[in-house]
Amino acid sequence: MEVAYGLVSYTLAKLFLLSGLSKKDNAQRSKKMEEKALEVYDVIRTIRDPEKPNTLEDLEVVSESCVEVQEIGAEEYLIIIKFTPTVPHCSLATLIGLCLQVKLQRCLPYKHKLEIYISEGTHSTEEDINKQINDKERVAAAMENPNLREIVEQCVIEPDD
Image 1 (cartoon, rainbow, N blue to C red):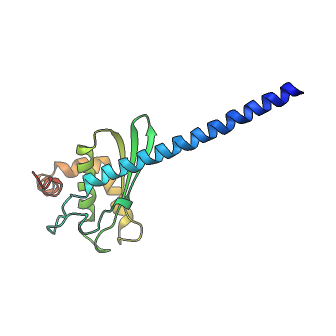
Image 2: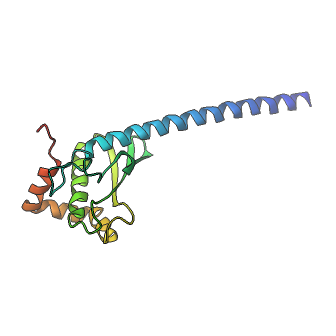
């Protein structure tokens, strides 16, 4: 009986130790995802609005809170961005989504998947636009259009360039 109590005590001690490590691992993982989200935000905040001389950050189209990063594999991440157009009928929301796609594809040094959405309830045709900006074939076709490509390039170019 004494041996059984000893084994139970030992097992419980190990369990408590492991649960503490698990909490520490989760905290480290959470901090890492927050750092990745800030890294993503730093990339997108300088994208220029297609109509105005302001950045998406200046216009509050993007903010730190609109970026979420989840680990989906070893050094592979899912990046979710929810941007907010300046007006509910913004005719350039699709172009802004395209700029986000292009800039992130070019600038992020790690393997990732992108999901870009218009924040719920902030645009009259958000469902249609969300489908367009997350369709790889449509994005590729849009970037083959020289006029559209030039507009995107002007929007995503770094201020120091």
